[in-house]
Length: 378
Image 1 (cartoon, rainbow, N blue to C red):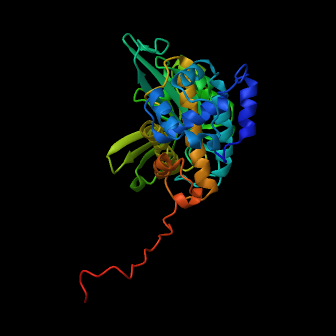
Image 2 (cartoon, rainbow, N blue to C red):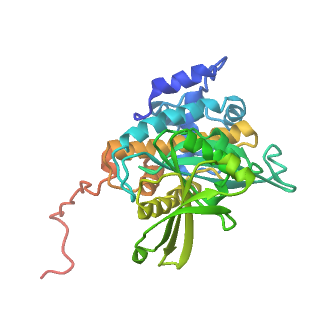
Image 3 (spheres, rainbow, N blue to C red):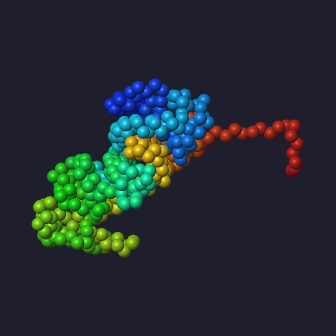
């Protein structure tokens, strides 16, 4: 927690009056308790209470104040504004992105490159009536924008499951000069035109029923998997009105899985093969969703209210980013998964932090007792 910017956290709490009329269990204590739950994979509030009470003498030195009780944790989840932890997560994200800004990725571009997608988390509709998805099913969606340098989540929007993915583009912040990689579920030419107007670039898979006129064809090397590189203009009154500019259409066949892909982009400068490599990088956002579902507590929730669910999600994201910051600042040569696994069993151990992640442990050599007789004397 020494890597946690406490002053910035206090500013977020003050912004939403999180500690108003709170005597003992502050927002910071709430954050520490649920960060502990994320790092040690606790299943419930009672589980958190039992484990923290088992190490009661060590809690004060860890920064936790007040009595840890299940009812206290439940009330904090219910009443403390989730935006406190959302704002704080964004502060950590900003810091992490600076640390990973110099990292390379597969496409080797200098410009910032993002992957945008969503994942669905199923919920019980009777317990989470606010998260309507289908007639007898509840769910929420995490619409996430990933910076491909370091796989840091830059933008997260939590919505009810019934919200269509393409609607999330309306609130997506657009950065001039950046690249946005998306699947074909985000094909909406009016919304894609926002990227062009904002001087940003998009790469998206085309649908099979795309109606267009070919304006220009470029020569491609078919040995690389490319099949065509065309400049096109959309047909149809609505499509032309929504996106009046030219588009670039690239056809590519992946030899490994023998599948054909067609991409649309508003970038005409990059080589066609680079565009295909950019889309392959989109898989990183899928790996991010898989990772946080496996290693963080965002599938089973400690509370049923919308505030409790969003609080848990944002604290989980904060823990993920905080581990990424520690990995970079301490130059730890371990994966994020290994770091989490090690932290889960060493949180309250009095061992130098860096030593935990190295294999050079000092071993005590036991000296032979001169009075002990040998069983076999060679």
